[in-house]
Amino acid sequence: MKKNIAIYTISSIVISSIIAFILMVGAYSIPTKHIRENAKSSLYTIIDEGEIYIKHKNITGGLIDSFTTTIMINNASFLGRESIIQDAMLNPRIQHPNSNKVRDLYLALEKDTLETHPIIDYPRYWHGYLTILKPLLVFFELKEIRVINLILQNILLLIALYLLTKQLNFKYALAFLTSILYLNPLSLGLCPQFSSTYYILLISTICLLLPNKFKQPYKIFLFSGIFTSFIDLLSAPLITLGFPLIVYANFYNQNLKQDFTNIIKNSIFWSIGYAFMWMSKWIIATIITPINVIIT
Image (cartoon, rainbow, N blue to C red):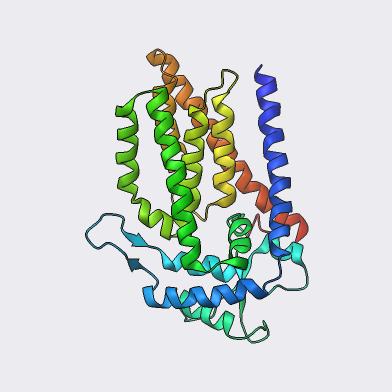
């Protein structure tokens, strides 16, 4: 049994890394013409807001992190160098010395050329959000992406609350909603950086609550860690473990010893998925590109 779990875990990480590589190459293969047009439209919104935009001054967590959003759009709108595969692994963007991130994006979008701009590589993360952000920017600007985010997130939240009520009871759903409100769902929807982990939190919770007698929760936590490592740009990765873990502890309630064992076991699977998926980016990038990402 333990051998089968180990084989499943290793194969899941290897296959996920291969799929992640293919998705990243596919994302960087998208022509940047329309991406850059929508990035320019999005820039006006970012300039109005500033790098750190306070949407709700009287609400804890009411910040919109336009600083990181600008970096993400800068990465997404990069024109591209000679090798799509190397760009997909090195994740280059325009960054000028003694400049802020908003000005970097402005200068990067000002002319369709890389010749006059300093380029930095940022390969230590997968930047998997680009597999979603790049296609979205082909059709939409930032304001429209925010609306899409809010709609999808609220749909998933309602599904999670329905399943919590059905599988446990209304009190659990109310406690979950209160915790989510503390995170400020409006800021989560308006800020692409925060959205990634919030989606994983909600989807993992829904998967844990779906009625399936053959379901193995450790797989949900393993893939939650893998997806978090792939998509997140180091915002709040632990919420994709903490929230589902609390739901799990209540839904799969046994005796105290078994509950504690299961919590530790699932936390380990999440950590393995997260850590080894992250490391796989360093290994693949080191093999494919001229840069040794492992030691730099």
